Length: 348
Image (cartoon, rainbow, N blue to C red; front, side, top):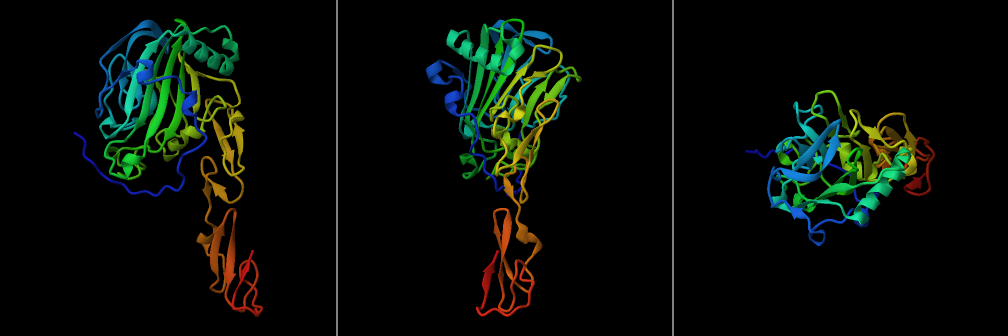
């Protein structure tokens, strides 16, 4: 049984833009004749037998489990609400789309279905061709789509229940090669209260995990920023140049990502520049002076250092500060002792 605890945190940047629009999601819900998990906390589907084998880390599977807490698993269901670091337990084969403490009794739905619809499969094949040019001959024959729609976190109070997440996972295969497509539309919380998150913000504690685990203790991968506060910005991140979208090849013993420049999508805010690095989903934002954060989202408060001299008052402005000087002082920092004709003046 969970015990609710609270950890207070302030978070200035609210994630609300640069995400995959719902129009770019694969169809889901009642109109698509999806199955739906009943409202639950830490629940899972029963074993779902699928009509095609799905290769995952060199192992072919004919069944899977949909877990409420933001992941799919093979071999067995997963009820853990704490996003543990990878590698996880032996023989736990996991696709962690947004592994966190989801509670759909507080709102939201988990939808899933397998499909061989030709329009669906053509869209998936086209996305894979664009991201993996060497896979131009890939033609998807089967897919399994799971959508966590507007889901809330465990322990949310009245304010916290307004914060929701919507994300989607598509497993795609031709029976030999297999891929996972991840779409993120809205991510407004990272942590339930049982993992020391705040009941009103859903932030703090142990944030959500995104990645893959082969279950052999050797092969695994976590998306950068997993289990850190920055994972709330995953709607801005990508490994295919489209903020809020990831595509991985998962049939081999090792994970393969797109060879595209990860900075092709605009991810850095306030005119920061994106620097792509060699490796798996490794990029960074080079921020202009006065801004900081994973995406240059935070305006540094330059008044914290009390730069205004002689009791001048400081006003923080984007990428700078202004000093409101006492009578008799002037200059950018009120450093000059020249008497002013006015009681005070505003200097830039």
